[in-house]
Figure 1 (cartoon, one colour):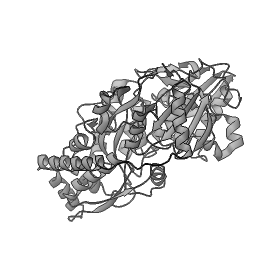
Figure 2: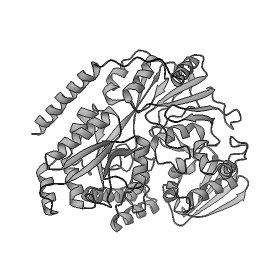
Figure 3: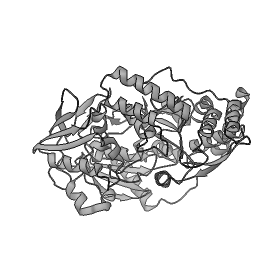
Figure 4: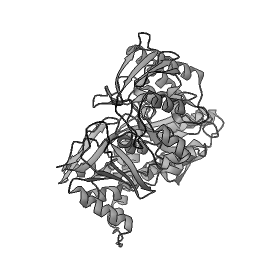
Length: 520
């Protein structure tokens, strides 16, 4: 049956691809925005402008309130962080030139870089860092970063460029947290002047500064001439959103774009041999699967969550929809992480076991739910595969296509039953486990278990990596037992760009940094 199931899907996919190839793209006169993109791509030839194709339009530009991975693609070039990472996931200085950690792990002393100003001329100093951290921690603001910084007790400004952060207890992932959005510094002056509009006209200290934004069309940054570090060679970056992966790729191959993220799995092999294109591959830090609303029926019933978990054939999805450009997932921690444990095995598909669970829960005839997906061919295919797999157990899945930004808002307001989304991942395993599975997690949608909370809290406070790894193994086992989130795969990250683009570093966090990029 399993082999027949996969064969049916392979035939279906082949027919879909043949149909798609037979449809000619419509011919239109270029709009003003398209004409500007063409001109920008031409500018890249004289080594001044980089045109970037993103997989979605960033929902907002304030890192302290961001919940979307695509936002971070822009942030890497707009904001500096206190610390950054290198290719080996080591922490390296950025706005903090150096730091010290007390013997008991509760006091972090940061020595800040001098001579740094925000894009609006505001001085960067210890008071600015204190302002940023307190802004994220303020419960009245509702920042998703608050959960990441909840270990902080007090912040003390020692002098203009020295800051002490006192923690309530040891918190091993603290530097990892500061290497992402919680460590990105925004201008206090701009926050006070712009209020909520800051998210539409941001001000950081990064190598590029904000110029303009036209939603669903372009987002423009220009070189920060007053940057504290070495000047970028690029003068301008233009980000363009293409939720349609085929259009994004076509624009790269035609020369309208210089670089794209999220290469469609079906095109990976083609791009390996494409003249004039470099395909870069990296193992990603995150996970992909299904978010479930654990507050409401049907997924407030553990047995129904488990049943859905059991009907999914992860290998089939990886082989067919993702063309082997991913790895079947057993949990939140991906291979390559120091905390990855091979004893946590990927769940095998078992339709009969799923039926038994539903019967035990009082639903022998199955149940129904709506699965929200992004408007992309590969997402639609994954959704259709899940729909077909679930039907064999009597689970009726209705698919609803929702634009990415709208879907994020719906998740934040619990206006969903299930959603096909993932998590881009963090350097420390806590950044994958705690947000998703802890009762107070920023991407936890109604799941609460005191045992899970205790395991994750202990792992945060523990400094011995081996002890932490064991705690995460126990948490992963518990997550498999309760299925608050359906893990399906760990993606491999592919970035494609023109071969005259040099200096690009493909880091495991999958974020594109352009400070060192130039055209040959």
